[in-house]
Every structure is written in C-alpha cells, then in structure tokens.
Image 1 (cartoon, rainbow, N blue to C red):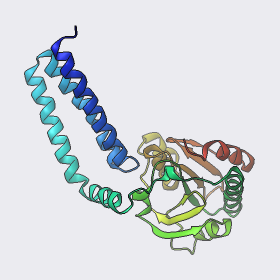
Image 2 (image 1 turned 180 degrees about the vertical axis):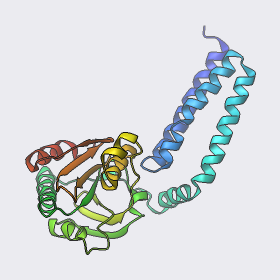
Image 3 (image 1 turned 120 degrees about the vertical axis):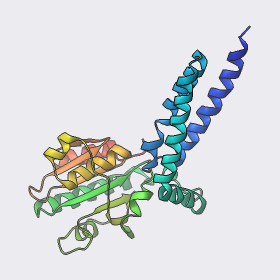
Image 4 (image 1 turned 135 degrees about the vertical axis):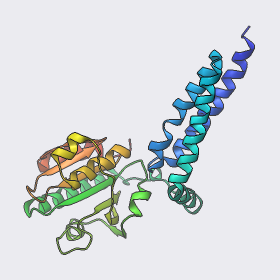
Length: 253
C-alpha cells in the first residue's frame, strides 16, 4: 500500500510536467526559452523544501519563483505579445510540417548554397546565412526585411554585396526560400569567442546557441567559410566538406 503523500505527489508531478512541456513548446525558438528554462528547477527545490519541512527555505523559493515570473513578464512583455499574436494568427503553421519534398530537391539546394558560399568566398564578400531547421526563427525574421523569394545563388549573392542595404545583417532561409534579410541575431557572449572573432561570427554562433539552426559565415577579411551548429563553429571549411556536412545536418532533427 502506497503512503498517502505519494498519491498526491504523483499527480502533482504529472500536471507540472505537462504545464512545463506546454510552456516550453510555446516559447521554444524565442528569447523567452532561455529565461523560462530555470523554472522547473525552482519548482523542484521549492517542492523538496516543502517535503523536508524547511518552511523558511520553502518560502524563499516561492518568493523567488514569484519574483522571477513577474520580472520575466515585465521584461519580455513585447516577446510574449508577439508569441501569442503569432499563435493566434498562424495556428497550424509549424516548421515541422514541411521540409524538402524529396532527397533530390534537398541535394540540389545544398549544392546551390555551397555554390553561393564559394562565390562569396572567392570575392571576399562577408555573409551570414542562417538555415532554419525545427525551431521557428520567427522572432529573428521580424528584425529584418521580408524577402519571401525562392532561393537562388544569384539572389543570395546580391543581398550581401557591399552596396546592398541588407549586407550587414543575416539572411534567413526556410527550406528553399529566402524568408528575410538584414536580420539581427543574438551575439555569443563567451569571453573566448569575443577575443577570437568579429561580430558576424559571434552572431552565427549566438543564433545556434539559442536555436537548432545552422549558420554559414563567410569572412570578409579572409574569404574563409565557417559553419556553426549548437553553439560550436567549424572553421575554414572546403566546399566539398561543406556539402557533406550540410547533407548530414540540414534536415529535421
């Protein structure tokens, strides 16, 4: 026979798990995700304090949770409004609902994106290209200029020409479409990264720290091509190696 407290504890854990799962799904791919990811730990510590009878400690964690939530709601009010607005007006829209129709289309796209990078590299034109995968990059897309055009190496190349007003930002691609250009991305905050690379590379690493996107960076100084994924950067990649890496990485995960 299970003790009475266990019958109450199990439903509470299931309900909290479901609520945190839904909350995580709602804000995933936005700046809110990094803020809310600590909430489960705070609730766990508050629950442990309550179970062990530490009343003062339990009060401390409850106060911290309330302050944390209230502060997040104030600081991230614009992001919250944008998330709920997009949920209402884009119900049913999900990056997971589509990707390339077949392997042939995906291979053709990878060859073309590699060709664009090669052209940019040879002419030493700096570029930052973000490939969306599962996480929706809606918040970052809204910081740039909407393009919504079928991808072509020529179009992508033209966006990063020095005379283009959008060349300083990032171009974000969703499957075989250029969704937006001139987008502003979060910068990697690592001290080591700050010392080693410039803003374009830091932005490429930063977006992959917060989402599962891939970031291609072409150096304006050296023409070298780099690829960032999960906050890590592969430097100075040859075109053949780039194609192989994209064939492995550029798919639903």
